[in-house]
Length: 259
Image 1 (cartoon, one colour):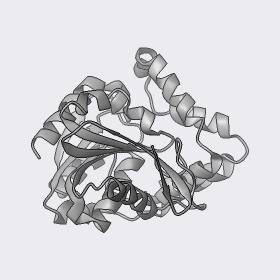
Image 2 (cartoon, helix red, strand yellow; image 1 turned 45 degrees about the vertical axis):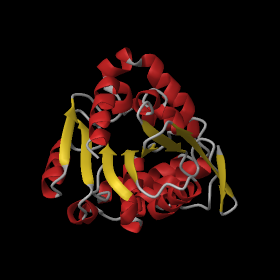
Image 3 (cartoon, one colour; image 1 turned 30 degrees about the horizontal axis):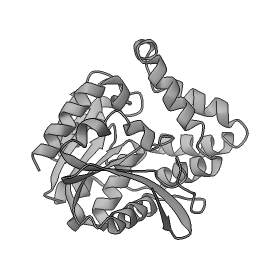
Image 4 (cartoon, one colour; image 1 turned 90 degrees about the vertical axis):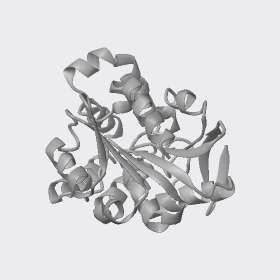
């Protein structure tokens, strides 16, 4: 389904009945990343998935997609669907967006799950890498995206989940360059939102991969402890919806059931 927001089309799906759970994909992903998760969760819940600006079937809205702007588009979809309270689950970039949403609309949050994500801001090295990527992507989009994807998986996962990884890569390659650049810049300028996890009393969960090449494992452990957030650790990497699909479904079902 399509909602028009500030002259941009925002794509979303809406399945099932019950507690509203909003699934927000990561960078270079779209609603397709949840296709194996939605059927299991929608049996007892109302599951909404949304293509972030510049991803999937959603349009771009300028040249910087800040986390706040992403959050506003999600709020527009929820208002359109007349959803007053929900549980948010965000993968990677999607996690940063859930935190921005919780900061702007705390009264709308029943629970929040960061999936392979963090409430920390980028360190200086990561910020520099994003700037460099935005320059390089304009000249070599396909190779850059392929390389980025390859770096997300270890040798074992690459063999075990070859088909799933290739399908995700094909989706990533559909992302417009403007969407890539706008999201990278939005992630680069985002601030730390540790305080959102610390000061709010809604249910919180962080799910991390022990071998995540994007997020430092020890830093994630420290973050969960510092913010007093429940932590679940999977044995693999950054793409838990591929590498630990069944375990993820079980954990999300339990998380939603408690609320």
